[in-house]
Length: 279
Ligand SMILES: [Zn+2]
Image: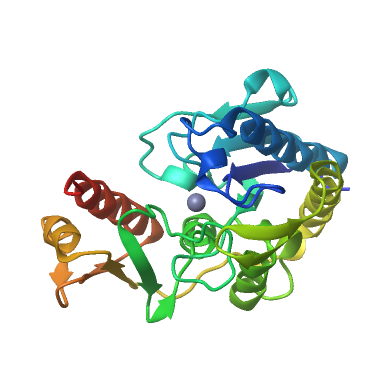
């Protein structure tokens, strides 16, 4: 058993069992209220698994959209919740060197993936593809860099089979993956039941926390060369306003980030500016 283990959980929505459409993931969508309960239950499953493994504290970061999705009354009272936006570190706000492991729940494939439910990277309306140091990046990769630089390894990724495959390819077999659905296209999947998904996530979180002491933090060498292909040149015009940004062509901007903290801030600054130009 672990002597002391604080656990960090980042919870997104698109990778939750049963979710296949923005009608479920947008606050104004008809099925949103039901979907946010599924999301909360999967977050709770990770919290329970962490405590099963002997965690001494768990913080949960609501990492989707306006970051006010999780239903606090339905979460394990032992967990603390980060909710609301804007957060400087967005999906990994609140992670710190006191955490022994990070768990990413309800995650999804990066923008431009094939057969990934609601694939996108940070801001789907404006980002067509994101690359980091030449390779296509998803949110798990970007967020794991922030965790890794604080010495926090990534222990668990849950979502569809595509984000799970991307996680194993990026982080190796040490990361536990739980596929709760098999995506056939961007808006269709064969899902296990929400109830079974929760049982698997609880078990996966328990294993991830138990094996955390043997996991190496994810630390690709800096600088982190960020490139985003935007959906139109107006978005890139706006992103280019951020000092230090280089414009590569009509659609693409580049930034050499010295660390993960800067990386996430630049992604947010670019996409907030780019989003402001959308008509
Ligand atoms: Zn996301």
